[in-house]
Length: 305
Image (tube, rainbow, N blue to C red; front, side, top):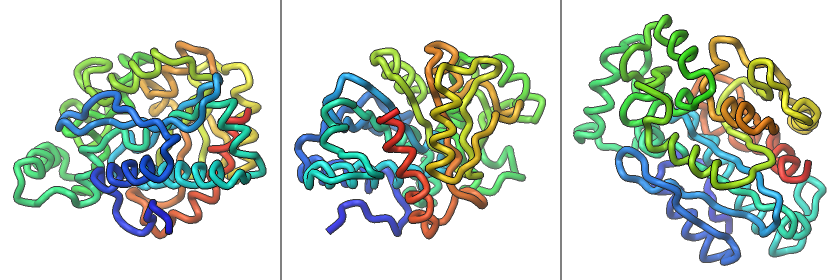
């Protein structure tokens, strides 16, 4: 029976219990915590494989894009099953991949925000009221479904030192000048513990490629400004062909201070933002199967290419 259930709102607590069950069932998994959220939740990372080549996948930078966490957790389970059975995923033998590649997966970058959108907090709790007090300053954004930020009202994917000042100018001009449900860059780069944790973790590794999962639009963003990393377009084209998604340049107003922007800028290696699914965030869990089937090829090819 499958451990990862793909038919319910996916809270942080459910994810943590799934990681525990996976680790018991598949003891070859390696799990580590790389830091803590604002509210003190551990930030787990799961390692698949023992290979020297390292790649890194992350999801749920944004709270109302929590379906991406389910995608990565299901991928972990399917990878473990294929390893155990000595079988293939997307045409590649997982045991061969296991020995040559280490896939590091951070399934939930923003657990505090995810728990808000998935209904984990009591409406009378002080935590919920704190979120609500920020949201009241931005009444045009639906609450809680429009929430993307962390507990402090900072957008975790606008926190990286890759044109952060330009991101601030753009977002301030759009009216996001204080803690908000979305699009507030914070008071400086890397002020938030979740963004700082993923930044430091990246510095401590030698990732050949990174993929950050978001929703929605069925697009793949692959470059940063005028930096086109070697093989970045070619690998992105393979991703597009495998998924049916469109390989695109990032819209200018969204093209600064993101995690993949910083990775491309500092490492000149392939980095991707995948905008999975289609519709209005948060996407319904009923889209899960389609999203997962579209993206399994990307998740395997990211380790292969």
